[in-house]
Length: 281
Image (cartoon, rainbow, N blue to C red; front, side, top):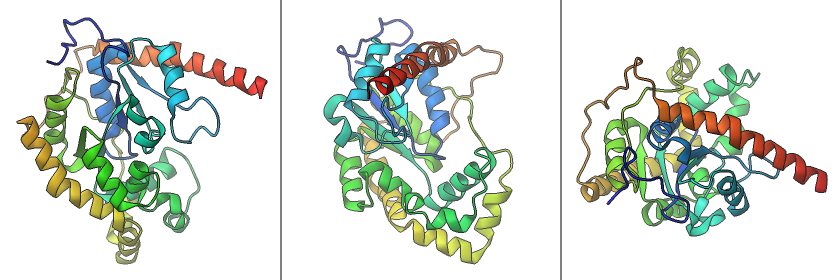
C-alpha cells in the first residue's frame, strides 16, 4: 500500500525507496517536477553534483550529500541523472518521460537560444555529438540503443511519453510507491515557437534532425509500442483525458515548501560543501 501524502508520516530515506526522475530536457519534465514537488513537498529535491564538473553524472557521493541535507528525502530529479543504474546502483528507483526526438531536439535548440541567450547556430547545435541521440545517451550513458532499451525495460519502474502525457501520469500515479497529486499547472512552456517551427518547415533541416536522432526515434517507438502499453496493463490505469488543473487560487503549499527548502537549505549547503572541497583540493 502506498503512503498517503496527506495523512501518513513522511518516509525517511531508510524507510522507503528513493525514486529518481531522470529529467530529459524539453520532454515535459518541468511539469512532472511540479507534480512531484506538489505531492511530496520537502521530501523531493532537485539535486546537483557536489564535485566538478557540475554537468557530470550524479553519483553515490552526491546522493549521500543530498540525504545528509534532507534526511526525509524520498524523491530526486536532475538533468545530471545520467544512466543512474551505473552511477547509483540500486540506491534509487529511476523513471523518466521521453519525447518525440525531432520535436524535442528543436525545442532544446530554441531553449538554448532564447532562454539561454546563446549565439548558437543550428549547424553547430546539430553537429555537436552531445545533441545527437540525446535521449539514448541520457538513459544508457552512451549511444547504445540496445542498452537503453534494456535499462528502460528491466531497471526503470516507469517510462512515459510527453505526447501521451495525461495517460503517462495516470500510470505513474498507479505505479509510484508514494501517493501523487496529479493536478498540475503546465510549466516552462515556450511562449513563441517561431524558431522551432521554422526549422521543422525546412525539409533539409528536418532531414538532418531525423538523421541525428535515429536511435532516439527507435527508442521512442519501443516505448510507444511496448513499454507504455505494458505499464498500463500492469497499473490497470490510464486514459487520455486531460489531467485535472490546479486552480490558480489554490496555493500549492507543498510545491512552495519544496522550492523553499531547495533554495534556502539545500542550495546554500551545496555551495558551502563545494567551497569546502575546493579549498581542500
